[in-house]
Every structure is written in structure tokens, then in C-alpha cells.
Amino acid sequence: MSWPSSAGRVAVLVPCFNEAAAVGAVVDGLRAALPDATVVVYDNASTDGTAAVAAARGAVVRREPAPGKGNVVRRAFADVDADVYVLVDGDDTYDASAVADLVEVLLSGPYDHVVGARRASTGTAYRFGHAAGNRALNRLVGLVFDTDTTDMLSGYRVMSRRFVKTFPARSRGFEVETELTVHASVLRVPQVEVPVGFQDRPAGSESKLRTVRDGLRILGWVVRLAHAERPLALHAPLAAAVVAVALLLGSPLAAAVLGGIAAASGLVLDGVRRGRQEALRLAYLQLPVPGGPSRAGSAGAPLVREAVAGTRPRPRVPAGT
Image (cartoon, rainbow, N blue to C red; front, side, top):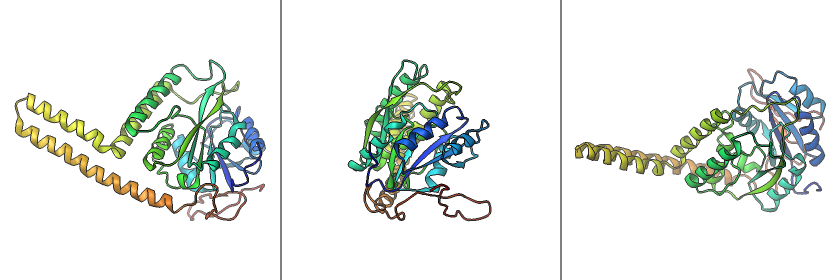
């Protein structure tokens, strides 16, 4: 597919931890599909030469020492100025050639959030238990946050500047995909899923996911986000449960007091939520629509900001552009 003429500055962000066996093919595929984009590989304290491989293939390499994909995304979203952002894992499991199509979908909508919904090409592309866990979490998030998603945990996304620059980025690890999905639901931005190919990892690479541990962490993050974004949905049944238990124990006064506290807490938190969401919405409205005139700067390569110890961040144009 040809380069979208209205794409503006496109930054492809590739979080990596020990992906020397895979990242070269990822960078090659992305640069072939989006020749005018800047591919920025964020090395998350790798010990296997990931950064050297990425740089040799023509990627801009930045480093984030704080472990966890969420920390990488937080840093990348803050440091890189672009009109369109692509986020894709560096493990060579996603179809890099689909990236131009995803960018075109974002611009043609226009959408603010395009999710590459994985379609496995082999029976072993998903690790044991991951597909079932993903489906269960999709249903839970859909129920709690009233969103229709089939692949909430996909690591392949294309986003507008106004989506990225209003994203709080509070998570530290693999929960970041859940946070991105909920952010889209909370802001009620136009979004869509597009099927993309998903394949086995290349030989010599190793998954960093731990099915049970990471599944529980993501579940905990769903609860945390629900407390922040849907407080009444949590506190109303909590208040009812407290009243029911107190009445069963023969203490109507305790039922009234504790139930009232739980209900009042929900109302207060809901007021805070409304104020926070309104502020996010106003910030979102200050930024240009995808494909429209950019306020971020002139056309060309994205700006990559690099923090220098003891100084304020300074603009830097990636080498080789």
C-alpha cells in the first residue's frame, strides 16, 4: 500500500526487552511498509544486544531503564512528538506489513485509536491459556466499561496525537494495553479494530509473559481502573452488601451508618471522576484531528526528546533523517 499523503509525521514506537533475535526483522518490516516514518526502538535495559541490532537496521534507539512495558510507553509518549503514533511489540509476532493499512484506517475514519486484532496463522502462535484469558478479560472490560473489544491485550495499535497526549500512562507493565483500551472508552473517542496476522516468535527468542502472574496483574488493574472510572458501579453494590450484612447481624444502626458511608464515598469519587474526565476531554479538544493541520510542528521526522541528567528535555531530530 502507498504511503498515506495525509499521514504527517509518523512515529513507530517499539518497546523491547532482550529481543535481539527478533527486532531486526521488525525494524526491516516497518521501514519497508512505512518508508517515511521514524522507527524508534525503546530498549528496556536489555542485556543481549537488542539496541545494537536495532541501530544497525536503521532505527532510532532510546533507552528506558525502569523495567516494564508501561514505563516504556509512558516515556515514549512523553518524548516523541508526531501526528500519528504506531505502537508495536519488538518480538516479530505481528504482521509489520499491515502497518500502512492501519495508519490509513486511522486517517480515513478519522479515528483516534485503531487496534490490530490478532488472527493467529498457526495453532501455536498463542501460548497455552493466553487466548482463553484474553477472551475472559475482554468480556470483563466490555461489561464494566461498556466497550466492544475482541483483543484488548493486543500490542499493535495506531493512535492519534490527541489520544496519546491525553493518555495518563499510570501502569508500569503489561497492564498498559488494558489502560489504553479503557482510556479510549472513558474519552469515548472514535476507534476500530482491524484484523492483523499473528505468528510464532522466531527461533532463539523468548516470551516475557507469565500467564498466571500477568493475568492476575491485569485483573487487578481492571479493578483499579473500575474504582477510578466507575466508582458508583463498585460502591452501590458494596453499600447494599454492607447494609445486608449489618441487618443480618441485627444492627440496623450500623447498617445505616456503614451503608451511608459507602454510598457517600461512591458519590464523592464519581464527582472527582467527572471533573477528571472533563479536563481530559478539554485537553483532547485542543489537539488537531488526525489527518488535519498539525500544531506539533512542520512536516518531516518526529521530534524525539531525550532527557539529559540535570537539564530540561531538549528537542532532538533523529539521526539519519
